Length: 173
Image (cartoon, rainbow, N blue to C red):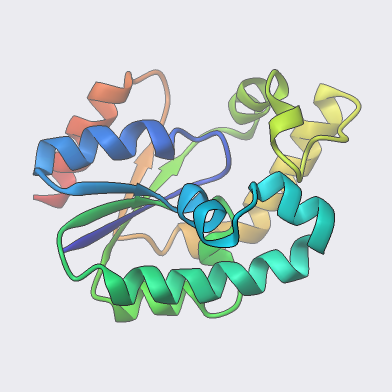
């Protein structure tokens, strides 16, 4: 079985993913790392040198490859936009995978992301926390259509990563 964690950047997919994989005795794969290894470049460098359109096309190509190569049990932390572009969400559904959405409040996400914004190409140029909040609110509105189709939606408030993992497992099993 394949499990895909979805959610906005900074939502904790790469933290929860390994915990979930360990609890299920599955492999864990961070999709951004997978893309970086396949492309031979960081996500930031891909955005900087080739642009977002190139990245989104490459992302779909790599998602197809990941699904095709992994018949075994795996937990994948997707990039924040991955399920929202092209036919990516359909590819995931066609793989008979289970999807989980980590649903955070936009203000909490903005505060989490503000400190590390330089590492995130889509928000690196934000000049104020208010601008970042507006940007995230807009993105969550646009992406909500995809995120909310997840098999499991977890409203994240103050749970620890371990508590979130237990909540996901309870809803999945």
